[in-house]
Length: 413
Image: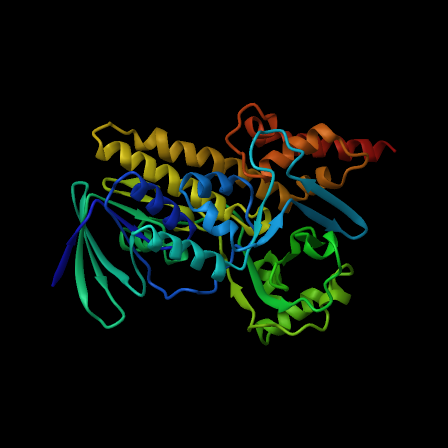
């Protein structure tokens, strides 16, 4: 059996894997990436948030992405009947990027992977991890290529960025139920033949059909748009006993705002269903490995946090591994797990309060409170570690308390 010896093995060539591999390579660490699929490939997570731009920039991947002219995302719009709330990332509490992108992930991830290869990083497609053995922090990973050939990869550390493949959680029995209620989604792409001119045609929007059910609309610069419906799994399953296409059609019919634009468009592929998508793990790291992105936690698509947590954890794990390889002691519990959990905890609160309706109460309250809106906007932009922001620091109570006050005021009127 063929054997390879490297410093760090990265499993998965999505945004998390590419960011961590690029950072390590830039710092003279011998890294190899193995990816089970062949790129380009379809994947969800097409709306980014500004925090990811810090990671692409630091990893040296931003120039290649910028050349692709993906649709710029300057904010986000939330619609509830006749009510509209728009967040502008340039008007937020925390410092940071004022924009990001809306991307067809097949093209986006393929651009990242090509740039990683251009840097000289060994990236091997259609190679599946089938076994891992640890001896202390050192590991031996058995990989099978598309022709069925096996090889062993000896590494000092593994970063699992396998996303929904969840390689190490499966092999090491690390999966655990999510704390979020079960939700599912159905999505596809359409050729946006009825797209309006100007900002209306390019603005990402979340159309609330019921308190826990919403439609996403993510326009791309290539003229296509991503359409998806999200809701409790019971609701999604009840939409239709037939095809996913029929279910998504029924969801679009529920949208007063988008029925004319998308009511009769053809789907570019059979809609994909993601059932009970939220994921969690017993631990985010262990001797010789770290879990990043969706291989550890996935919350919900409502605030587009998935890629941001993927690149945050990918970049952080790479930095800590680099320190450790250079002889600096790393406390993975405080420097990695606790740090990531603090940000995940903030977004988990926002997801929960979205589905209770409390956050929607704040979004659509009139007259708007510009100070509150700027602080919430910073969270939606991904700056969830800024303890100067009370909507981060006091996330456990601030939303429900403010929603309660607003509802009490309405009852008095």
